[in-house]
Length: 304
Image (tube, rainbow, N blue to C red; front, side, top):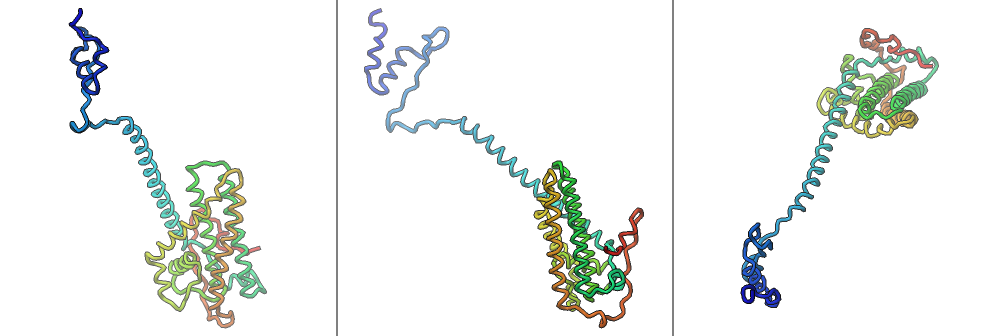
């Protein structure tokens, strides 16, 4: 009816908030079944009339939550990986320390009988060549086992390789000390830990410094041993590449590393070498007892 409801055009001719208020007054707040069906439009505050209510952005927060969960998962993965690597290093170091007294070592008399007519340097060359071949064989064998990638078995393969190569190199270091007349004093266990210190520090045992032998039984040697094993682990990672690539890489790298270590130790021992004719009479080395099922060839057969 005329005059009951203003014309719609009249509302929108009014400027700013007045138009909105007039529209709200005309239609009323009811939007339900009995209402006009048009929702009520809230009034727009004028400039300077008060603070504008904050807008809640739930979409951005929802997008940030998956990113936070992914970052937390990455942190957990890095922490678990570091804990696993630390556990592998501790396991390898314990096995090397445990196996050090069990490595059979040939004394000078046995070596001279097995390699007659050779001088100290020639005999050392023979020992280094044999140890390099043994380390190369271990690397090739582990690489062949890793021909097909099995991720859960990789830590065990690396641990077996480092432990095997360490036993070969410990035997080499001990026999180089015999060749150059630098046998450490003490019983089997003390000499074994002295050789282990030489392997860790990549140098010969200095008989003029008693602290060298005492440190072999302390915690410093264990820390240095873990550091040496960590470096070996990082260097030996290419040895477990699949499809026989790791076999070739492991053979070459183990041969090179063993020769490099042997030359460092021999250079250190050669500067303090005692001629064979000037050596006092030394008793035969006591050998570790054979465990049940161990082959007798571990007692040190003659090199070809």
